[in-house]
Length: 205
Image (cartoon, rainbow, N blue to C red; front, top):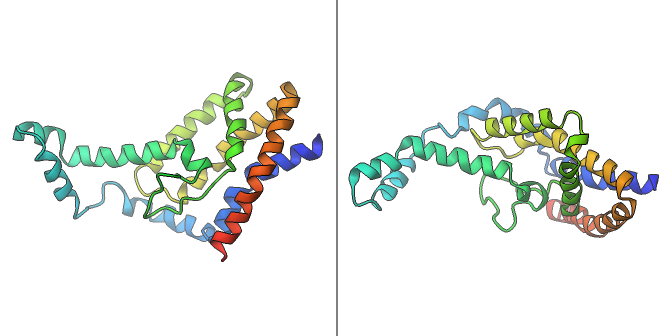
C-alpha cells in the first residue's frame, strides 16, 4: 500500500513541473512575473475602442450603450475572464480542452485528470485540514491578483496550494476509504501514463 501511495503522489504531482521543464518555461516564470503588470488588463489596447463601440451599437439608446459598455466594463470583462479561467478545474486537469486559449497560453495539462477525485475528496474532508480555510483564501487572493494580466506559467505559484489539497485528499482517502483509494489509484495509473507520454511526444517530437 505504501508503494502504491507513493506512486499515486508522484503521478499526481509531477506532471505540471515536468511539463514546464519540457517546455523550458521555468526560466520564463521570473521574467513573466517581473513584467507582469506591463501586460496587464489595464494596458492600452488598440482593439478596445472597436470592441466597445460594436457592443454599444446593440443598444437602441446611446446612454445605455455607454453605461453598460465602456472602458471600465471592458477591463472588468478581462478580469472576469482571467479569474474564472484560473479557478476553473478545466485549467488544471484538462488543459482547457475543449476551450483552449489559442494565444498567450500553453494550455498545459497540469495534473492527470483522475487526480481531480483526490481534490474533490479533499474538499469533502475540508474540515480535517487545519490550514484549509487560510489556503483557500490565499488561493483566491492570488487568483484575483494573477487575473490582472496574462497568467500563463505565472499560475504555477498556485501549485503548492493545490498540491497540499490533493495530498490531503490522498491521505484521507487512503485512511478512510482504502478500497476506493485502490480503485482510484488504478484508474490514475491507467490514464495518467498516456498523459505523461503525450507530454514527451507533443513537446519533444
